[in-house]
Length: 198
Image (cartoon, rainbow, N blue to C red; front, top):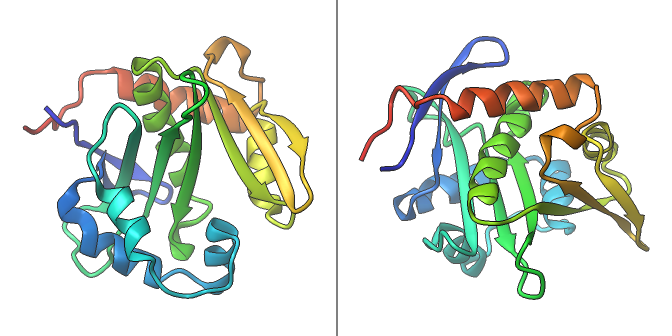
């Protein structure tokens, strides 16, 4: 059973949160093509504006033990490929560590999509024995650095950015608005999904 969560995001936008499926390949390609140059740079650390087929293949491949992706799509809207997506990839060296990344469409940034995606990945990771998320973020990506810091992530400086490590422990979350929103989404996801579909 793959859970599908119907909910309202940000300004009451009706969306569906669900795992990424192999059939979503075209949707993902279209979503990446719609990103602004700045969003593309922050996500991939490069100025290219295209789609790497190998990356898309890896992203859409089903491997629940090592790699998991969740996406948010607008309900009953086929014109917009999606609101955003998030993935984690388990470390080959430390079984309880995974690298995490997020992409949110420019027009939906600032509405809480990243926090919702983090909650979905958090729950999936914890069930798989993953206890820590690590994210590599460019120094110029101030919004993401501020977000991770507000969640209590530890920071290590690198030449071009920072490595942010977040322990997946609710008790360790700080008393910030970002962490409180994350906790609310975690509680929501732990309730029986009203729209679970096979």
